[in-house]
Length: 251
Image (cartoon, rainbow, N blue to C red):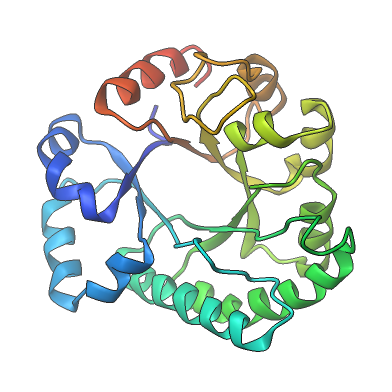
């Protein structure tokens, strides 16, 4: 289970730090825009002290209102500012990956994936050097995608070991119009992280693994032997432990 991480918002770390330290959990720390605005260098030093058991880390960047594929240069500029801040933090915490949302919505881009792709490439290429300096990888997560083609195109165009895919099981289960096998056939060469949560296909409810309808057996069978990060995205300590126990048979 050494590759298993637990997602925790930065502003809730203090609330759960005793549980985290007791269980010696590997973490994916989510930084919201609000937490970035209040963050001071001393806060990162305290965080490192709290995590003195040397866990494996990943980070998750803010996403609300942000758009890495924005056509409007000013919106893309704000997005770059937020994303760059998280990669600056990564230089101190040395996470394995930093997760960013793709920002692709086919209706917003009038089904023209290349409009999104052109702007996205500008964003990610500007951030590539920061990721290299932090000795980390950028993992781009599926959100509203109902098929994997835009993410595969992005990976092919970037063609860099600095970039990979964070495949989110809950988002796929909620939005997909394609079978899981099609997603894995298209994206498995690029997957460097999984976000593991479940739902019944009607709402992004972040249920524990196997409390919904996602096919985890097919997922893990397809990705067997890959060196990737597995991140539990349950919302309570009880659901975290339930997911961890159910994942034992797969990891």
